Amino acid sequence: MADIKYVIFDMDGVIVNSEPVIISAALNALHEAGIAAEKADFMEFIGAGEENFIISPCTRQGREDLIDELLEKMFVNFENSISEMKVFPSAKPLIGALKKRGFKLALVSSAAGRKLYASLKAADIDPADFDVILSGSDVTEKKPSPAPYLLGAGRLGAAPGSCLVIEDALSGIRSAKSAGMLCAAVTTSFSRPELKAENPDYIVDDIIEILELPEVKSC
Image (cartoon, rainbow, N blue to C red; front, side):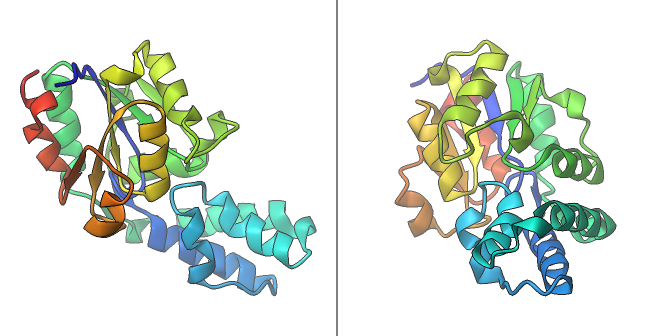
C-alpha cells in the first residue's frame, strides 16, 4: 500500500461541474462572432483547458484575429452565469476531512486562473484550504502531459509516489498516472468503462468515498 501524504484535486468534474456553463459561454461568444461551433467540437478538450473551446474553432476557420476578444467574452459570459454552475456537495466536507487527517492538499487544474478562482468563490471554498494551487495559466504543458501534476508535487515538496490525485477526465487520469501518482477517478464526466480503460487505481461515484480508500483511511 502506497504511503500517501498528499492529495491533489482536479477542479472541474471533481469540486464543481462548470463544463455546461463554460461550454454555453464559449458557444455564445463564438456564435455572436459568426464562428460555427457545437458542443461536440469541445469534447476532446474536456479537462485540457477551456481556452481551446475558442482557439480551435477560430483557428480552424481562419479567424485567429478574434481569439483574444472571444476568450474575454467567454469568461465574461461564464462569470455572468456562474450561479448556474453545479457544486458537488461532497467537495467541501472531503477537503475538511482530509485536512483534519493531516493530508497536505493541492489543486491542479487546466482551467484558467480567472475561471478557477471564480469557481472556488462560487463553491464557497477558501483557496487557503489548499497548500498549492496551480491553474492552466501556470503551466506550459497541460494534461494529459504529466507536467502539471509533477509541478504540483514539486511545489508541495512531495515525491510523486506519495500523492493521490482525484480526477474525472480521461486526460487527467493519463496525466496523473504518467506522473507516477495514485489516481482515483470519479464518474461525473465519463462512464466507468471509459474511466477503467485509462487504468486509474480506484473508481468512485462520489468523491466522499475517497475517505474510505485504504491509503487515506489508515492515515
